[in-house]
Image 1 (cartoon, rainbow, N blue to C red):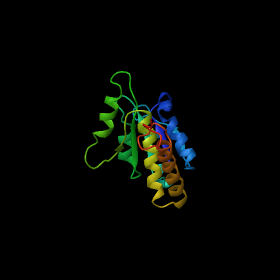
Image 2: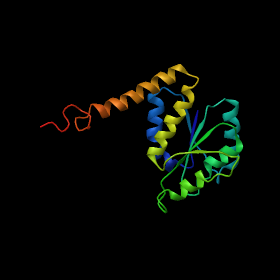
Image 3: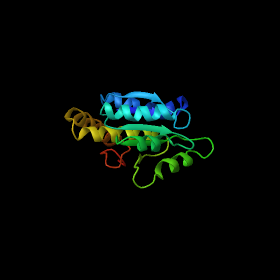
Image 4: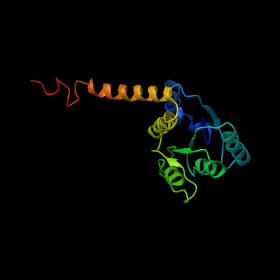
Length: 165
């Protein structure tokens, strides 16, 4: 699995996603690629992802955010687009650039910023879980832990002590 970003400054957006992938024991590699400044490297990376049978590529980009779409144009490997929050338009520009792909070149698009990156990692895990029982078990355990954290919160409405007098 690949994780790419348009510039090194996008790394903080992806940090939580990388932590989740590591926690779920999913192997990945990280690269900085620019759709605008390194288009040949981008095309080579897309071809390499196919040769190595990557399950998917998480691609984070800000501003014009062409990285996910350009990757999708060069490969059949599923691309999961993460809009990076930009200064100019708070990531709205990034979101629209990624989500508005023309019919025939799909990019799965997630929320702007860190939440979107984490959800892209969990979506990638779900893709892998369809064929990898180990990932499936770890993903199920992760989800159960999330549920337990809510149920164990004494302020949760269903908690026996919530609202007790």
